[in-house]
Length: 171
Image 1 (spheres, rainbow, N blue to C red):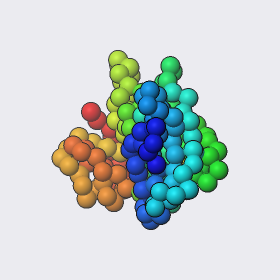
Image 2: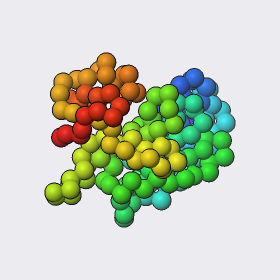
Image 3: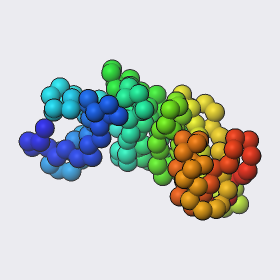
Image 4: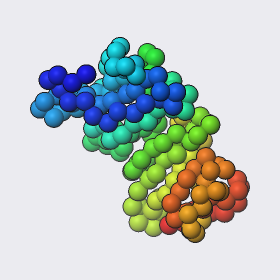
């Protein structure tokens, strides 16, 4: 690791056996997402984004990544297989601020900031890792909602998560 490049943003798998990181060239351009064993051995390029790599996160099982990348078009969520580097894309047709895996599920929590005027879509959405099932979870303005958030695998600051099928989203 290191050398004529700059390695940044290390993230370990939940089991601590591997980690991923972004490798940049000295010119500052992003070279891509790399993965290595916990001791630094076995470094290999996993994915080169089409645009700027805004963030990434291991799946709960440590087999995939959710990558947020931006380019000329809308932000794009890419799922990358950590074993062979194959990818699939999720286009939620909104400006995505962040993406994280919902614990214990095969879903992603997507935070959006899509100032669409009357049809503004700010907030949290759930989407399956295959891109299906984009839903706005029942969220209502309130306090911290830590206990409710943990029950549903979400932790939302300044918002509470209601029981499935109840409530509505609010800014």
